[in-house]
Length: 427
Ligand code: FES
Image (cartoon, rainbow, N blue to C red; front, side, top):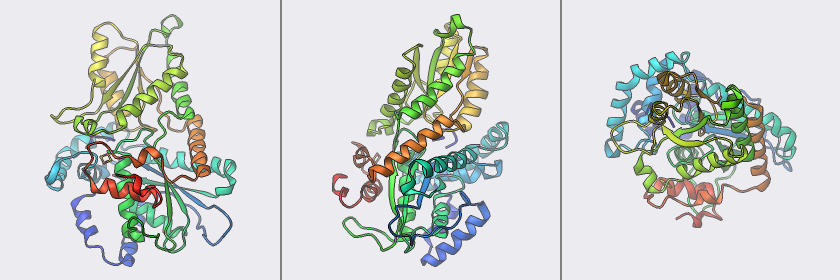
């Protein structure tokens, strides 16, 4: 949710998309895009002909993504600033978005250059998904084989690229099969998971035929289900707690329980918070569960980072919080990124190179991100197995729209993923 480097599809691509003709033309174009950009994952073809088995199962990790090289920054920013779910810019979004993206590109390119030339989020996402699938094959043999895919909202591999790979691997397009959209945002926001689901729903409709509420599925379309939130899963909590304990262990024993833990999550515009977005309360749930696991061993606060622009955002800001505490003489602080599952520009640049650097105090440190943490990857597999065994299409919570939501897109997307038996619950 990098509002800091604020994004949808660039207008150039958008105009192409609206002129898409028959499915064949889409498939041909996407195939070409896939070849140019590289596919989400290389998996052997599967067949859906094996009746009597619940597998194979496609496991699709959804996240915002990030540019793998500095050359991808402008496209990334263009998509990000064009996404009204993430950065609401009103009716002029498609004009203002690209302008902001172009203006910010050089600065953001420099930031990616400073963290090694690109975002590691694709590397980590592909690794986490592939490793999770290996575990799932063992602990959920009835839904095996599990095939890993990644779908990013603003960078390669995009949702349409992932969908085309599903077709190439024998899912859908008349062959049926099951796919799980697994959000990699542990806490649900309509700006993040909601936006990724809107995008998946859009491409599903374009590529596999629109399913109207109450209508039966087009024959042989992919059967989607969604893991839409997991803010206080015990495995996630354990992985965060272990990383915090490892960082606390670097302080002298006599100081250790006085170190302040500063949980930091991406902020939201107050217009989104006041609409009723569930993200702030779900982030708070994660923080509370982690502190419970740590037996409330240290004082702690939750703060919010990466706000941009003049409008009101949820605070207190992480950078201000660190400065204020250091000014007051509290110089032993551990920053804990609590809303992302791998390193990204907000940890590697904003926290490490800006906030910690500016604090200029050796006691200000950061807990490691989850990245390749085996406890975390086991948690992903446990969450997925539970979802597969339950057989639910999405959580009950996902069927409820925000109190202030007026979006027809949200309504249609939630009705689709809730399934026709539950669609009437979505209001
Ligand atoms: Fe939250 Fe539409 S904005 S459901």
